[in-house]
Amino acid sequence: MPLNVLIVGAGVAGPALAIFLQGSNPSYNITVLERAPSLRTAGQQIDFKNQAVDVMKKMGILEAVKSLCVHEIGSEIVDSNGKGVASFGITPAGQQGRGLTSEYEIMRGDLVNLLYETSLKQNEKVKQLGKEGGLVYEFGKSLEDLAQDDNGVDVTFSDGQKRRYDIVVAADGYGSRTRRLAFGQEANDEAFKSTGVHAAYYSIPRIEGEGGVAKIYNAHGRRLIVLRPSDRPVTQVLLFTMAEEEKLKKCYKESVEKQKEAFAEIFKDAGWQSDRLLKGLKTCTDLYVNELAQIKMKQLHTGRVVLLGDAGYCPTPFTGMGTLGCFVGAYVLAGELARHGNNVSKAFSAYNETIKTPVEELQKLPSLLGVFLPSSRVGVWILRNLMWAASKFEPLIPRSQGEDPKRWKLPEYPELNLK
Ligand SMILES: Cc1cc2nc3c(=O)[nH]c(=O)nc-3n(C[C@H](O)[C@H](O)[C@H](O)COP(=O)(O)OP(=O)(O)OC[C@H]3O[C@@H](n4cnc5c(N)ncnc54)[C@H](O)[C@@H]3O)c2cc1C
Image (cartoon, rainbow, N blue to C red; front, side, top):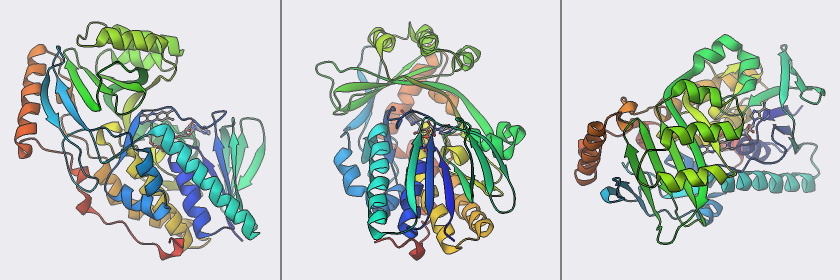
C-alpha cells in the first residue's frame, strides 16, 4: 500500500519534499496543509550554497532558479556618511567567502512559487499516468491536534476535520506547532536556542542611483542595518538588533503596527539612512519579524511524525544555510522512505542518522555573534577596521566552518528515480 502522507507547511521544505516523494513513487497520497489562506510569498533574498545546488539539479529546477536570480553584485560595509569601508564580491556556490553575496540569490517568494508550481506540474503528470496517488494543497487550515499509534497518526485540522495518515511531516517552520504537539512542550522549549538577535525584514521604494551592491551599516547600541536593492524595483531592508530584547519578544504577539513601533523606537537614532528606512517601515505591507533562534532536537522523529527544514534544524539566517537544510532534508527523507519502502521506523532512523553531520555543519555560527553587533561607538570602529582587514587579507578573520562543502558528501539515492 502506498503511504498516505500529511506535510504540514507549504514554505520551502514542504513542497520540496512533495516533489521528491512523487518522483520516487507516483502512488503516494500527499496532502500539504498550509495555515495561510494562500502561499506565503513574503520574505527577502535567500541564497543557495554547496550541496543545495546539487539537490536543485536533482530536482530539475536549477535553470529556473538561475533565471530568477536577483543579480546582487557584492556587498559593502559603510560608515554613517555612506562611505565604503570594506567591500566583498560574489562567492561562487561551492566556495567559501566572507561577503554576503552568493552566486545564486533569489527572492524567497519566487522560490516558494517555483517549488509549488513544480510540484503541481508533476502532479499533473501523475494524473496522466492514471496512478492512484496524488498531491493536494489545502490552504487556510492548520493542524490543531495529533495522536498516534503504531500504525498511523490521527489528526484534527482547525476546521474540525479529523483524518488519519500513515506519516506526518512537520515542515511548519522554526516555530513549528507540529513539533510541540508531537514531542511535547518540554522538548520543544529545550530545542529553541535563541541567539539574542531580533530581526525585521521589509521593502521600501528604491531610490535613484541605488546600485546592485548590498550595503551593511553598524550603529552603536547593538544595531545592524542591511540594504539589498539588487536588481529589484524595491529595496530590501533588514534590521538586526540585540537591544530591548524583552520589548521585542512581547511585540511578536501583538499587531503589525506594534511591531513596527517597537523596531522604529530602537532604530530611530541609528544614523546613515535610518530616516528613510523608518519612513518606509511605517507604510510597508510585507513586514516579517522574528527572534533569530536555532532549533536543536536530540532526535528528528517520534513514532510516525518527523521534522523537516526549519522545524527540525533551523540554523538562523546568519549561517545562510536554511534553504540548504530544507533541500538536503527533503532529498534525504524522500530517499530513505524510498529505500526502506513502507518501513517508516527504519526510514526515519536512517534519515536522522544521515542528516546529522550536514545539520551540525549548517548550524555552525560564528562563536562570538555579538561582536557583529557592538554596543559602543568604539566597538563599531574596531569592527569596521576588522572588516576592512578581512576584505584586504582574507585569512585574517575566521569564517563559518559550515560553509566548507567538503565536510560531508550528499548521499546518492537511485531509488528516487532522478534523471
Ligand atoms: C513569510 C515568511 C517570510 C520569510 N522571510 C525570510 C527572509 O526574509 N529571510 C530569511 O532568511 N528567511 C525568511 N523566512 C524563513 C525561511 O523561509 C526559512 O528559514 C527557510 O526557508 C526554511 O523553510 P521552511 O519551509 O522550513 O519554513 P518556512 O519557510 O518558515 O515555511 C513554513 C510554512 O508553514 C506554515 N505553517 C506554520 N505553522 C503552520 C501550521 N500550524 N499549520 C499549517 N501550516 C503552518 C507557514 O505559514 C509557512 O508557510 C521567512 C519565512 C516566512 C514564512
